[in-house]
Image 1: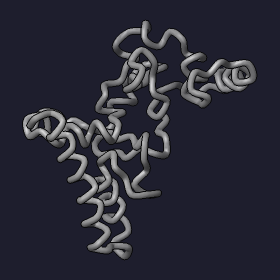
Image 2: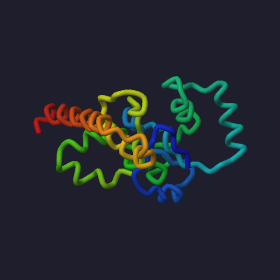
Image 3: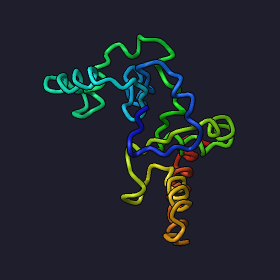
Length: 173
């Protein structure tokens, strides 16, 4: 199992070990392509060599690893549902925050989220406007309580509150 560094694991992910080789979650922006931040694949020196070789000539639609990996695994979408991880294993932070805004969505989906993906803005680098900042900081400060600053925690809650209010205003809720 591969987890990109800008992920936050919120719940059990054991089920991923039971998935077939190769499995990944659909990309939010291009659902017929996978997001390379969470992948299940069997380790193989031969595959690694093939991937390294393919990198020399690989086309990449995004200029990075995700486009190259989608070129390397072109039949991912057609491989069947077992190879497509549910969104709860690769939920973008702004979608998570969007789902928190309406209470009906919050009750239905948020308990299922296992892995958050901070794709647009990283709360550990800057103030964010895209949500789920308080979740990241809460988890971080659980492990580093000596860094707790009440003002900072309030700022991150305010960031998420603003995002939720914008979502509610746009949705008419």
